[in-house]
Image (cartoon, rainbow, N blue to C red; front, side, top):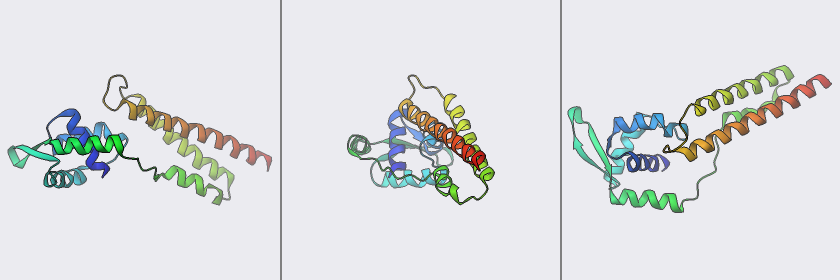
Length: 170
């Protein structure tokens, strides 16, 4: 459902666009909060057209279709934004590694795992810091992403301090 909403949101924000254009926009904006590739986007647009949420306005060279959001699509997007309680389901490899960290017998190995996680958080923060924040579409998601990454960095620093302290105490 969220891919559908993400595509409706993009069409609402940027106006008519082809599947290719939407995939590119997705790659440079929403991909930071929701991942989807061409192989997911194109079939979803076909389903959305069948459901009356978008319509193919024009068909160009090589069957390229330009999609636009319909009134029904705008209604569904608005309803989802205004009324939907977001799922808090998390699938996070860093969290899974943190959960399983005590299974490592070697404290140096555990430290290396957390250092690697920390490096990934730091690289992610650097990526996010390169994105424009003021006045841009998605600025609130960018702010949330930065806050989440900073929390991950703080966790990594705290965990590394604890692991190192325990390691030297042995």
